[in-house]
Amino acid sequence: MPNKTYNFIDLFCGAGGFAKGFEMTGKFKCIGGIDNKSSAIETHKHNFKDSISICDDIRNVPPEEFEKLLNGQKVDLIIGGPPCPTFSTIGHAKIQSVYKEHIDKDITNDPRNDLFLDFFNYVDYFRPKMFVMENVPQFLTKYKGATFNAVKEIIKRDLPEYDLVEEVKVLNSVNYGVPQNRRRMILVGYLKGINFKYPEITHWFREGKFNINPNNTDIDAEKLEKHISVKSAISDLPKITDNWRVSEVEYSKQKDLDSYQKLMRKNSGTTVKNNICRLTNERAKIVFSHMYQGCIYMDLPPEIRKVLPFREDIFKDRLKRLVEENPSWTVLAHIGMDGYMYIHPTEDRTLSVREAARIQSFPDDFVFIGNQQETYMQVGNAVPPLMAMRIAESVFESIINQN
Image 1: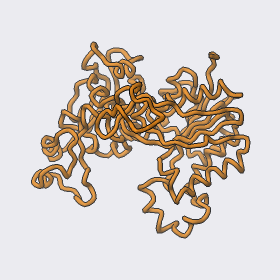
Image 2 (image 1 turned 180 degrees about the horizontal axis):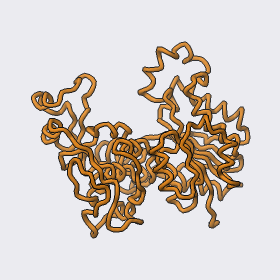
Image 3 (image 1 turned 120 degrees about the vertical axis):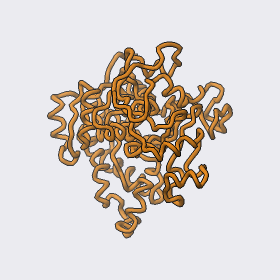
Image 4 (image 1 turned 45 degrees about the vertical axis):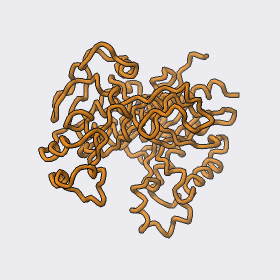
């Protein structure tokens, strides 16, 4: 196998979870990134020393300007996750009244799709060997598939030398060794002559337990590994308390580490950073103390819910305690607000930034820069690096085996 490293740029890069996964293969190097969030770019700069990391709106930085900053470096690959509110479940209700007369028309008329189109403008300019775009699963089904059909038309019309993977898939990070259920659409395009296959799944988790016989003829269940649990993800991290203010702390254990913990600590010493944990108010702590693992807000007795009342017709799972032996549910950017959906499985507090990062599969040598809310949100917005690494390995195989 050729000993070659391919350069890539990371559009809408955030902190760099997607890019970290590609670099973890040892076969790709991030040479540039762009995002409009300053704290995320500071994190990106810190963790990708060879990258030209730009803090700006991509609409202010045409690809010609980006190319100048790269100083002649070739772009072999473009990755990124353009924010597309039109595609998200949350955004749908908001746009119905404003854009309902356009829903059955050309969806590219929606001005908020400009960022999404900019991704393809960069592809058109740099002409990389491949491009990989991630987005919410609804990307494929919104407006009865009109969104995805528009994408295919854009590629066919403006990028005729590229093929799009025949069946675009939604991947779940839990199937690639990430201790979290997180589903993302992964769209891959490549120059003609290259063929791409999605990575084979390595782990299985279903309906709260390890399923040794998933009903899927493409999967040999007996060869799959058991899911990575929340306990595996965080149990070796430093012992901290609610409102912990010290970033760098010694690990709670140095021996008898499991394979996931060894992987996360591969390039770390005896300490790890980003152990900041928010202060939980006293009423919330009282409610936490009544919650068992897997408990949600509406499982609690009425008298306990009255201690911390919410709109019960809307916030049925406003509070959720993680289950040690299961993977986590999806870590969202909302963790930057209060963390009530991610209560520690055995302690009456929410997760620290590092614990949330472990659940996202960020290695411990990846350091987040910014204030408490910013670092939580960087974690919640990221693509899990381990899933990105599996995708990157498939991308590499596609490139080196091109016709």
